[in-house]
Amino acid sequence: MIELSVENLHLKYGDNPVLRGVSMQLGQGEVVSLLGPSGSGKTTLLRAVAGLEKPAAGRISIGETLLFDGATGFEMPAEERNLGLVFQSYALWPHKTVFANVAYPLKLRKVPAADITRQVQVVLDQLGLGHLGNRHPHQLSGGQQQRVAIGRALVYNPPIILLDEPLSNLDAKLREEARVFLRELILRLGLSALLVTHDQHEAMAISDRILLLNNGKIEQQGTPQEMYGSPATLFTAEFMGSNNRLNGRVMALRDGRARIEGRDWSLWGAAGAGLAVGQEAAAIIRVEQVRFADEAADADGNTLSLPMLTRMYLGNRWEYLFRTAAEGVPVRAYDAVATRDGLCRLSLPAAHVWIFPL
Image 1: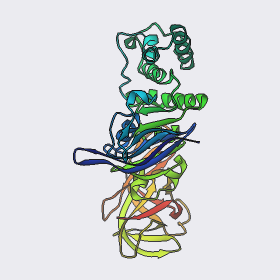
Image 2: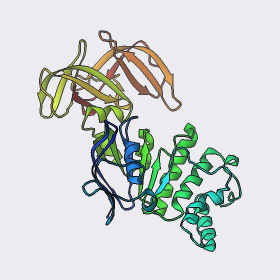
Image 3: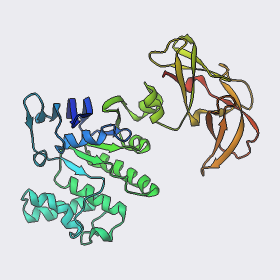
Image 4: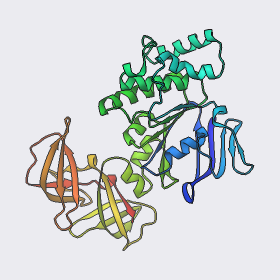
């Protein structure tokens, strides 16, 4: 069942188009992340759904309820959309207790006091905050403040919860713990959630589906596995994951594969749409797919012999840095040991190389 539907949405700031015909759907019980670089339009899209920005054209609806229709000029006020919204800054009332912060939306809706007490306590218990109701925001950790903001958005049982980079204010370790908690909470409560983030790891960990935005348009959408393992464009391939990129010229096309050459290297890989022989192109391979070729040569000849420049300890592995001789292009690889040195032979398996036109 479709919970949220956005159709051909356009939005401008003055003469600057920010959304250029975005269409998307959010299913019941689904978590969809809006992912992209700064300025791609992801937060603007979320705010348009919330009613905080007015589109120039398009249509937004939740089930059978129309929220915005550019053709007729209809726009439902934000306060009537009944959506849960978690801001990046949390936006908690500093002078109110945790209980009062979470209760505030219910008081606005004139819910009876007894029901407010019951509903707020249920939400606080679900979030592990049941014993902190009398504290004020400044007495809480960043992660606890984030949970209060989520509780305030959930307390009136909205059909959809909108989260605008809810974990960005947390430090790295706490952010990792918080995304596990958030995913578990969403699944346990059966929520439909639309999440804005610029962090690909966060999007992949939490989402059922990812919409990657680029310059106001959806570049590609799919499951985290599809977005990471089957990028359709150079932008998607580079945005998802940690990558090596080598620019060259397409020298051959055969059975859906392409061979690209640089000044002192040659690689086979999967051919992206629109490739032609003689065209400038880029070869992309995830860093974790590069192997140290200690034994037999790669069947496609996808090997590079490069001097090791340096290595960095990452805890569970070492990251090695190399550079091509003629062009000085950086090439990275991971390994479990720290014994690599001097000239190393690297294998870039053709099955994990994508070649896209420039």
